[in-house]
Length: 115
Length: 110
Image (cartoon, rainbow over the protein chains, first blue to last red):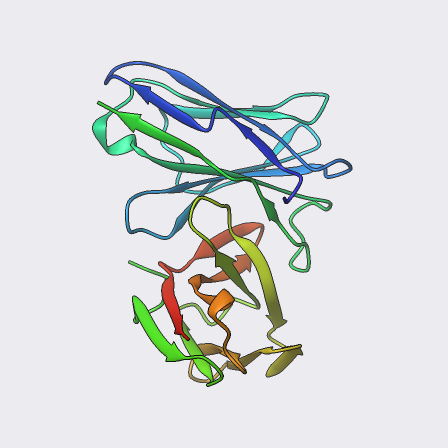
């Protein structure tokens, strides 16, 4: 158990809908990262928040947005969902602000299925 | 265009032997490399890392080698155990962006 929690574990929805994925980092961690893993693909870095502020953006679509709240939990919002958005979404947390030596601890992921 | 490549989607090794997982990258500015292991239905777990100022880093049965001129790194697992069967991702931390390879599925046969 990494100490990072993600809810829900599974989510099934229809095209055009909007969903919110939630992540609670490990106690004491200030950074939260979001990743997408499509079928047979590697992890695609989406976005990084540190202590409530956006720090880095990766391959995140405009239909997707995220935020980190004062209690440090984070939410990833996916809107106007398409079939291709079906994937595993992972959240990770770390103590520091994305320094190279910072270790990320991953949650178990949310499996999103868009029908 | 993939910046981090793992050209072997899968690898099978006998228990007790050495497992060698390879990773190639394209950007010579990358300076910090990591390996993660992932079991089914779990998130990735950090294994070992190496900075570009080193060419080798060891942690127990796991050793990572970095060849900067070839833009290549490898993860050696000796001896391999059945519990090592998992998907292994090579990753780069670059300017607060993280780039992952597509992964190699390692199967260690008893």
